[in-house]
Amino acid sequence: MNRTKHIRNFSIIAHIDHGKSTLADRILEITGAVSEREKRDQYLDKMELERERGITIKSQTVRLPYTAANGETYELNLIDTPGHVDFSYEVSRSLAACEGALLVVDATQGVEAQTLANVFMALDHDLEIIPVLNKIDLPSSHTEEVAQEIEEIIGLDCTDALQVSAKTGLNVEKVLEAIVQQVPAPSGDPDAPLKALIFDSWYDSYRGVVVLFRILEGTIRKGDKIKINSTGREFDVTSLGAFTPEPVQYKEFGPGEVGFLCANMKELSDAPVGDTVTLAKNPTQDPFPGFQEVKPMVFCGLYPVEPAEYEPLKTALEKLQLNDAAFHFEPETSQALGFGFRAGFLGLLHMEIIQERLEREFNAKLIATAPSVAYQVTNTDGVVSIIDNPSKLPEIQEIASLAEPYVRMEIHVPNDYVGAVLKLCEEKRGIQQDMKYLTSTRVMITYELPFAEIVFDFFDKLKSVTRGYASMDYEVIDFRESDLVKLDMLINGDVIDALAVIVHRERATRYGRAVALKLKRSIPRQLYEVVVQAAIGSRIIARERNAPLRKNVTAKCYGGDISRKRKLLEKQKAGKKRMKKMGSVEIPQEAFLAALKAEAD
Ligand SMILES: Nc1nc2c(ncn2[C@@H]2O[C@H](COP(=O)(O)OP(=O)(O)OP(=O)(O)O)[C@@H](O)[C@H]2O)c(=O)[nH]1
Image (cartoon, rainbow, N blue to C red; front, side, top):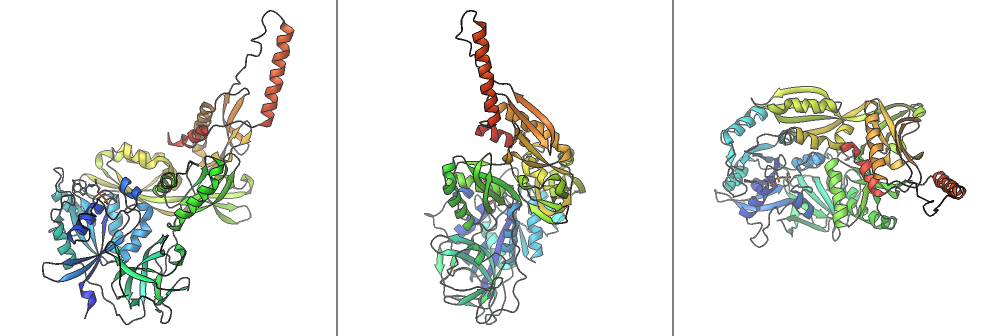
């Protein structure tokens, strides 16, 4: 029997908030995968945090039996993909496991930047794309214009585009029929050597690493000895099954099928996403082209507020890393903040999510230093290295050149806001590449921008100058030489390492002044003078001063004993000198946080 004939593997792709998770929920309901009792909104977004923020972080796959109008029962595999640009590699791998994709477009919004980015990825994988116009229950939906937009911008025929409300369930049944009719069935020889793609993996404290795979050809059975292509390591399959969404065990899987396996793997690196699973005794000669190691792009220091919290923080970071191959950290010491960690993330959203999870799930109280990107340093002796921490930058005289990462960014915006977007991009040292009208009212603007400029506050600014109407997508393209300098902050002559940043020379003075002022304002006045300085090398570019509090030591001396007064004042002066010499200014934590946030203001 040809098993593959009734299999349909598909994903849902959409711009954030266009209704992907809601549609997935309705599909689960219709196919009976989730009973009324279990029903809760956004079943697939497992983590509490994901549900709260309304975003999907971890891909999750479900196998759904569906009896179509033609009376035949199909095995639908819905592969949920994360929607955010930080996780685009995960999206790409998930799409590689499918033959088709539902393209969900919010009919009140139209095509957005990540709609396009996702569509291009789906086209790269030769997927059959089914356009679905969502939210038609809303009076502000304009399906005809949006259908036309999809035709014009993406080139998909929308004559019979499905019009649904994922919220009410209207027409969602038709989506399932379209999947059965339009998404091609997979093919593949069940007797060929096993070739399966790892498109997701995560760590489960009971089962070890859980691997989601899609078989291209061959067959896998429980008990098989598998081999992971990139490492050559072998494991015995101890558990084999599919999520329905609850895990159900199966004895074997053949071509086109999607499932999970466990094989006593202890670390995510035992099963990297994008790698090939084959059988040890008869390995495929034609593995998938390999996988891309996801590299962190944004870095920050994470320090416990209380030194005693160091070990618990380390444990928490280790736990998070078990489930997140893209999250890196290593110990770091700062003179100012003590023992902590340098952590690397895919992007800003990834960083925010991890910081929030640490605080929420692990009750960690954190000080996070300003986010920074990785810089490429060429030494005077020609050695090229990547540094992820400004305080590790070599001395100026040892640096031949400094390069920073650039991104290519596409911004979609109604034409009324084009001026504001261009202004913002120019302020951020952007180089305009392209600008074209997608429709008579919507414009796509393409810029190349230094990643460091968007790390701080670009998205918030973009939202505010366009009243929330802009959407964007970006990818890191290369490193480019720039006129960058390391800016140090000094308090009473001591360099505060945690506040060091690398900035463009033109920005240095403004940044240094802003931070110096913030520090001055948030460090309470002391009995001695506190001088805050910003410096590039030995050159001071900003200076602020808190005058000493003069404790009135003579208050008790009534009358005219002037010599006694003088004596007391002199004693006080000597005392102040001593404190200054010790050089230890108590910097309250709020002062740090204020300084770290200075750039965002
Ligand atoms: N009125 C209406 N609201 C909808 C519909 N579909 C989704 N929504 C709402 O739109 C918002 C976003 O929906 P989600 O399903 O979370 O969107 P998503 O695309 O999964 O978002 P991410 O997970 O962040 O990518 C939610 O508040 C939904 O309730 C619809 O058909 N009609």
